[in-house]
Structure formats: C-alpha cells, structure tokens
Image (tube, rainbow, N blue to C red; front, side, top):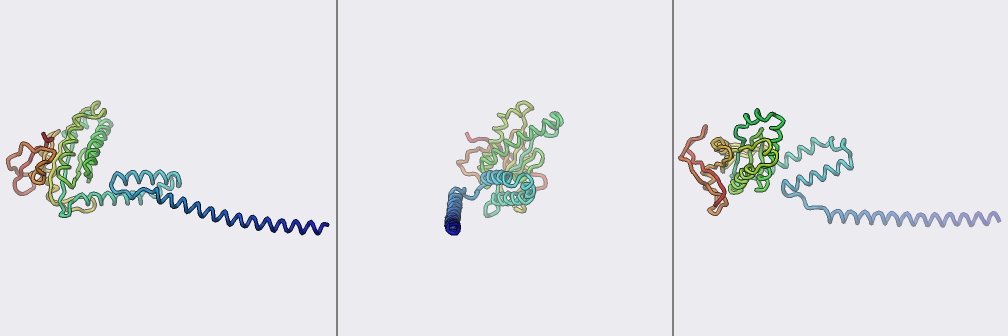
Length: 272
C-alpha cells in the first residue's frame, strides 16, 4: 500500500514539475512579448529630435529630471561636466549657423546707459535684480525673432541674426518693452538701453564672431543714446522696401574710431 502511495506521489510531483516548466516557458514568452510591445510603444511615442534651441532646452530639462529619478543627485553631478561641454558645443553650432553661406550676419550690441552710476545708486543687490529683468526682456525679444546671444558682459550684450529686418524688429521691440517696464524695473527705476546694428561678413570661431564688421557694430552702438536704436548704412542697404521698420535721421558721413573710411548711421524706428 505504501509503495502504491509513493508511486502516485512521484507521478504527481513529475506532473507538477511539467506544469511548472510549461508555465515558466509561457511566462518567459509573455514577458518577451510585453517588452517588445513596450519598446514599440516607446518608439511610437518618442518625440522627434530637437530642431532648435528651445526644443533642445526642454529636452535637456526632461533628461535631467529622468536622471535625478533614476540615479539620484550624485549620479547627475557626476555627469555635469560632460553635459555642459555637450551643451556648449550645441550653442556654438547655433551661433555659427546664424551666418549666411557667404559669412554675412547682422550683429547687434547693446548696453545700459549710465550703468555704473545706476549700480552705485541702487546698490549691488538691487542692481542684480534689475539686470535680471533687463536680461529677460532682451533674451525674450532675441528668441522671438530667432536671434542668438553670442556673449554678455555685465549689462552688455552681443547678439546676432541671420536677417537684418529681424534684428531691427527685435531691437525696436526691446525698446518698446523697456518703455513698459516689468514690476522690478518700475519699482527700482527704468533702464535706458543703447543698441547698435550692422550687417557684414564676419569670421566665426569657437562660438564667437570676429572681424572689422563686429567692431563697426560696436562703434554704432557707442553713438546711440539711451532708448535709441542706430544702424549702419549696410543695414539700410540690406533691408527690403517693405520692411516693418523705418530708418530716419541719417547722419552726415562720419568717421568711426579705429575704422577706415566714413560711415552713415541711421535711427531705427517702427514703421508708420
């Protein structure tokens, strides 16, 4: 009797082992199928590669959030230098691409009139807040007209556009925004910005621009008063007849410090 029970028990164990094995095989197949479905879904929902600086910035934010979730803060810090290097290279590429195939680009310089005196009057803490508000206005308009900030130094900006009309419209828009200041600027005092614009061929290297035409744009900015946008005769020549800005009050031919020849400078205002 005992022997019969042992045989029956052995047969049951063998049958159970077979069933478990089959279930394991089925489970493995199901897992593989689910993984494939998830991969297909991920591929279908994955956004297209970022095509412009704004899209890339959003993509970077999402990647950073994912890294924090998956790796923790330590894991993110370990890759910071590599990420920053890659980001810098992307921005350099954007700057270089602002130039037309012949190397022509429209260059703008701006700064705040009497910034040293304003800083002394407001104090460093308030001045930093004012600069942040000022920077927000400039960067917003530059981005709106598809320009690119090349570099900044204190209250000074150098930014570029592929199209001269876009540069003029952005500059006029900046002045308009500053005449309707943000709460910070209303509370601590308005700032008056000088802007100069010039179009010409440049040398692009390491995310920056060099050459005589860069210097000419800076000299045009030096001539501007606070709240004013000035441009060179080269900008006037490059604008279409139906441009959405007007150029008025041309100067007589003048010399610009350190540059050969004489130059005519125009004031840029909204059309109409």
